[in-house]
Length: 114
Length: 113
Image (cartoon, rainbow over all chains, first blue to last red; front, side, top):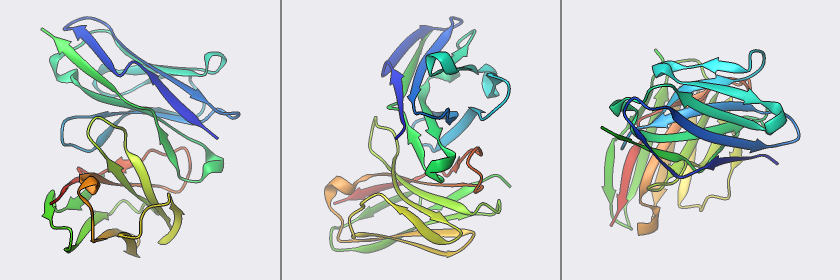
């Protein structure tokens, strides 16, 4: 079975500061990993994904994430926060053996202070 | 076209009503999903359709009845819902291959009164 854990349900950053959102997974086989962003009363939008190959993945809106197998982590970062980054962020994982089932972490709400 | 379209955007229904949520995509995706999302929580998987056949039912109560009439459409029929069923219902689709991402619709905000 696979699980995805996001450390910290809320993160507060100042505008221009580094954004770091943590995601860890547990499975016997490295999963496919995704970061999604959700704005209020909206659906989920893909920020980036890791499948195979390069472990540093760049996404939209200046976000990137690094897959670290040794740490079973897939943390999301952005060097400089913008007010528009205030949203809910979800890490999600999928396993080929699990068919098309995505497992979501609990989510992290990002607040950006001016 | 990379959109998943859900209708209606908002729905208020009584506990004795019958209503349906609709989802449509034209990306040729053969896996389609229904998720339920309560406030400040992650989406919870309800159903997965693969090639128009129900492949996963996460022990959802029978008052929720999914239907996949063709490869582009997904419906969720609602009957005799409870107030605790009020939530944002999200539809998603993806290609069958495991490493591809799911595309989400904007959701239907359902309120049961």
